[in-house]
Length: 280
Image 1 (tube, helix red, strand yellow):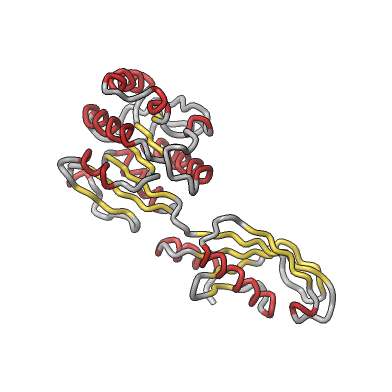
Image 2 (cartoon, one colour):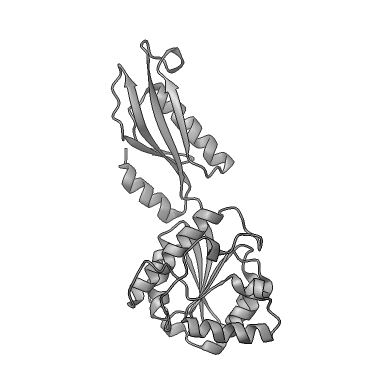
């Protein structure tokens, strides 16, 4: 059987959901190693937690979780007795962790330096990415799996096609385009996350112009600018990209399933970013 680490990476790359099963505690006469893991997909298993009736029951539980789409981790305690075909007492505790479910649909507007560092990070997460820019030449030759490249002269028009609850990241080469995208996103206002690259000064200017367009203060509060985790320091594109990816992860962990404008603003969940992201 394949090693569980390799299997987990392969299934993640393919976008196939699975459950990671781990032995947390083992007390019984039949030795099993605490920390042993196996990966269970809808059709296959990878590695082992020791075989036998316990592993069979774990497979059934994991596949029930996959079929129902459950996202929460579960702890299950199994008494080692007649129910598991054991002759002696004891107990095993298993942890079931759903993996590989798509957590976020993400739209990245812009293909500059930070975007080129950010998109591969997002592609390695349980996310699906639309990467949008008008400049074909700015995209790298290799587009990561799970990323859809969209070249269009009218990036703002793409907003109408975004799914409700989308994570929207605006980092184009043009401040006027950033403003138009921001206005369209805030008017729609059904995103889970909206981040705009730039400084606090840029935010103040954009807030003034967006208010003139009829955007309410409540909607403006949902715009994350500057974006990214303030704890991640640095000005290099990859450093900024990592801070933004960290914020995306924090948001989808907090908001999974809340795909509506009623989701709590990210500013209530994260410390205010102190970094000035002035370039893309």
